[in-house]
Length: 340
Image (cartoon, rainbow, N blue to C red; front, side):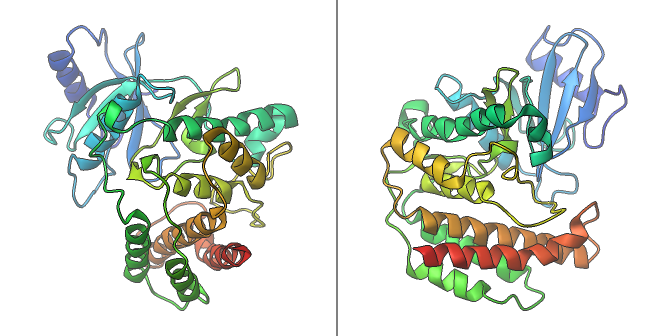
């Protein structure tokens, strides 16, 4: 940790704001470090030597540094605090961009490890890896069992027409970053649109649910679910489809896309789906559609990263390989959808 200001976080102004809003919370000079691994919003660990907190803010150079994402994340985490879903406690939300240059919120720091690769899981052994990964569908069932209205999230999204809107949204994203021919992508998008499932009752949806978006404690239990920036009310099986996609074996050596599926003891996607179905009582007979949609969504995200990389707008390790992964995800989506 450094006492110097990390990019995007003025520690003196943060301390002043905390003292004004939560007198006595901070008892000494603040130190901070940037937490690596976040895809979009910036995350910092902050401490005064005694207390430990986490600060979240939009990325630097954010075109619209609105309070929307921050308020949304803060709202859902606060709402879930007294449920069976493990989330960090929230400290405060600041929607005034004048304090540190952007809206932000502060939450309690939870101890735990975000496992991002099979290599990180391997030293734990097959039995521990299996136990950790099987906790994912169990926690997802707990999330989807929450009554949105009962926790004040009844207006958190528009569940009607959710899948159609999602497909349109990601189709528009694809068009916005279209710079080359991608074999099969139109076939996949069209086939998804022609075979839309009938959604079950809406639930609070995380939107990016996978192993490296949870913290695992020393007892191999999920201590906290993180990164709620894509959460909404919608079709709960979109979360399960994404989890299944990340849990399938991906033959992509040196891929910058995080996957833990190759770790010894890692349960198969089919077992995770079966666990979820048994515990939730939901019909998962159309799960291949949701998994294929997850492949399409990630293909679009990766194509956008590749497009920005070709324009020189994105730099970093692994970005030069992103473009070659997109056709793999398109093919996997088509193959999964054909399984029906």
